[in-house]
Image (cartoon, rainbow, N blue to C red; front, side, top):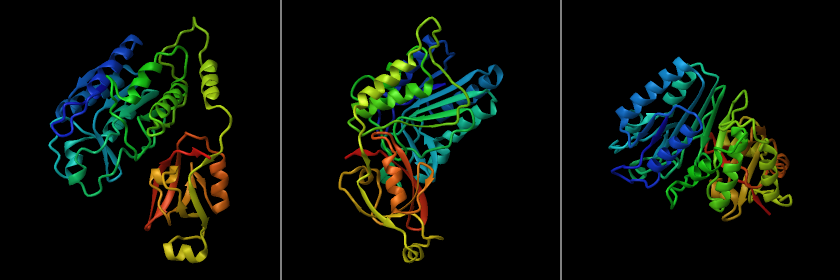
Length: 338
């Protein structure tokens, strides 16, 4: 199922219809049965997604959903925005947009062994001025078992619409998708590397995976396996090992700080300063934030945060769980090099 929306009355986009058309053509070449919708309104998108779920349930196989166009997060949920949506307020999004949860539900209920969801929908919110929160990009979703969710950029960030025929992410996806004998997750690492390089670090694709097996878009048993060559190329491009940093100074959370902040235990690392223009500042970390987790690892002190950062890879996004103003939140940070 491929959808590309570009002809919005408010904030039209240049690339999504081209992106969807080109991805659909590439998938047909690779043997996929494809349903393409361009510039779909809410009714058309809803009908297409329902039919897609029915086909998956009936025929099985690997399900793939690709969307390019406007998308946004509201109250922790992601929505795809149809054309002619006439959204004037934040509370209208749930009934004028398409909840990505609906797509996940249709794919999960089909009972097929593998599903891939690709969302090139992290552009600026076109209705931001009339929204209370005006959150950037999409929020990260956990992939159901047997699923892979791919975002064109890190959660909470926005992607480039591109200057050519395709958006930056889709351009690299098209360039790599047909590589023979390469597993989808390794292929996406290459896409991430190329997008990060092309945008000079401004955009880094992100994914959430719970795949239980391998998947190759273009299996070619007659050709030599390409994975070793791809890995070697990525490693070679990285060059000598670089020391990662977030551009953050922090301190232990004392019992006094824990009481003042409403934390149940004196655990974590409190941000005391940020390097202007550094990875932490760019990603939205703020002074007095308390870092509780680093890629799922509990941070109990300033030292454990430093150790966790030292094990990260330069240019590869990490997820921080942060305590700010009485609530926990997650954010993606891309470590830089010293």
